[in-house]
Image (cartoon, rainbow, N blue to C red; front, side, top):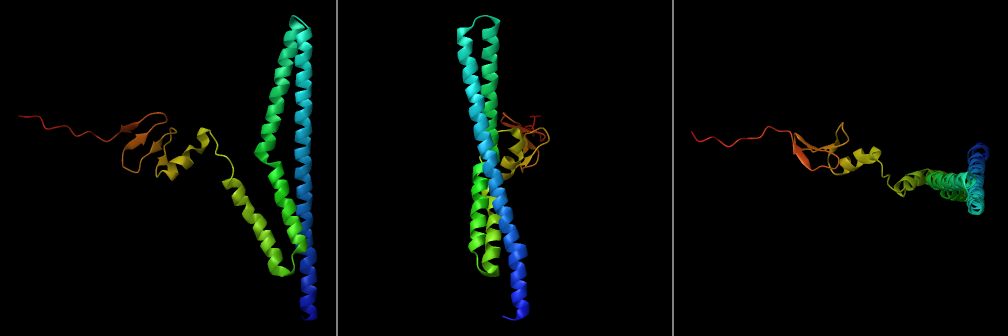
Length: 185
């Protein structure tokens, strides 16, 4: 290697590989902390909910009802926090970034380093492919496209055949003019 090539390799290592590895490690720590906070918050909310529910058993009247409602609200908040943690996927993201940082630290040469970075970028498609499907009607257009139909404006779907509309929850409705049998004359 020429001195210029060695200088470029050193610069590449410092500015590309080390900076990207530091970013991956920082991201992994951030997602680990977020998951830990969500877990502790969930435990605290459930603990408070159980304490409020237990205290409600020993009281009567308005105080008992208020503690019962408080317990239910705290349990709902704990559930929402658990759902948020699962939705964002703090644990898989932490693992993705931690693995990328480790692989980048042991990479030798340009090609291996770029393969690690490209591999991390390629994981994003796998994360979305492994995500559970949404049950809302917002994703209905995707289902219709997979079936060869285009989404209609009212939430139904238009069949590739002209004039046929499928409405949500209904069978097929044909908008083409019907041909009438000839009337004997």
